[in-house]
Amino acid sequence: MHKDKLKERALSMVPLTSHYKLMIEEYSEDKIVMFSWVNEQQDESMTVELDCTGNLIYLSIEKNDSVSVEDTLSIEEKRKCAEHFLLSHYPSALEDLTFSKTKELSGVDLFYFEQIVMDIPLKQAGCLISVDALGNIVRFRYNGVKTSPGIPSQLVSKKALMEHVRNTLMLQQVITKLSHDVYNVKKDGLHLVYEVNSIFTYHADSLEPSLTIIHDENVPESYAALPPLQTNLIVNENTNEEIIGITDELELIREVDMELEIGVVWRKRDWKMSDKDLSINSFFKMQSEDTVKAMISKKTGKIRSFGWMHERIGNLQLSQEACYQKAIDFLLKIIPDYYPYLQRLIREDEEEDERKSKSFTFHAHNQGISILDMVIVVVNRTTGQIDFYSGPNFDLDELTQIPTVQAMSMEEAYRQFLENVDFQLAWDKDYDDDKESYHLVYQACDRHTRSPIRYIDATTGAIIVSNV
Image: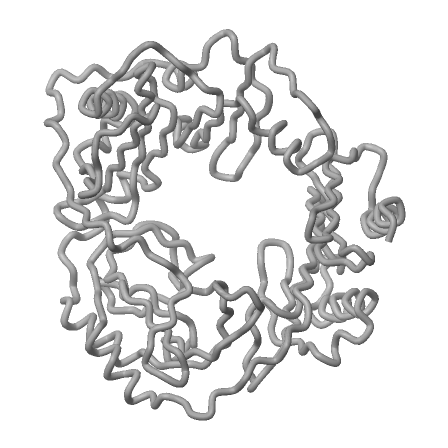
């Protein structure tokens, strides 16, 4: 289909008004075309992706409309809207796809139409459709119908799987921040838990592990205490801009409300974009090239993170040790209250190098218990300035309420896991294959919720599963 026809088709799928302007018009090599429009404030957007024949692949409509409770449709009515939309674009879709489930998200309901083989949905096949309270389609992703995979002639027994899990299960006591949007916890915040450090996914016809996530576990790590906290530490009275290093040559170009934080972006006043067009690459350049970005906590008004994409070059040649001292001085200035809870992560493959910047990672802990949070500081060797900072993501007041002595021992948590674990079949996608293919796997899950077990609460013994 000609480019003009593709654009005309995309325009017919979104409710554009005059205050929207075209931001992206991209024709990629894999024969996908993308159009994206934004309003003047850039807080609303509409995006359409089509294949080369004009079939809809992706739709996203982000608007700030508010809806009264009285206008809300029932879940059955929303599902009918989803099905009608799917069939309007793919009339024969329900011959191969089956409605399988729905999830309630913030302000929308997500409907899954999946390709089922052996009563099991194929991963990344079928389509997902989000419907708002009024029945409008606000998100659509069509992954298509895949070639049905081969079915193994025999399956491993669950007894053999249980024995393997019993011999390889690893738990670690940690403090971590959990959200009820992701896990089956009653309240958001810090929890003292036993983390399940093993990934129990096996080929269904053998005990061979099937890992779809590659962990960097082969590089030995150790931790080192930080230099003692100064007794005469001067309280930092610098502004956020002074801490980040914002100078008069930079100007504020935008602020974005991100619920718990405010995103702030600066750029040089005389910056001009070269070769501007409507490509995705040009869009990202406009958004990020030569900028300084920061996230400011709404609760405290303090910096949570920042990064310089505007290159700064000086005449210094700082050693690794000098950079480390710069990082320590910065931590004492920006988060002195957190300083006693941090320790430096040291990788055995660390060595002096000639790169322009040096990165330091600090892990949090409380009385010997690891907190699953880290702080990163990147020091510019040529200027001595901080080019990147990512701060702690937990509240110290909340940390003091967390018990440091568990009610459940490691042995009890181990038994609790084994008493609640079960296995379910799933189709896993082969990402290292040039051809798109699937293989059948067994995935460990909670026997009651059928969801992956991620943690065991160290104070109550409750099984904590992932909801996503």
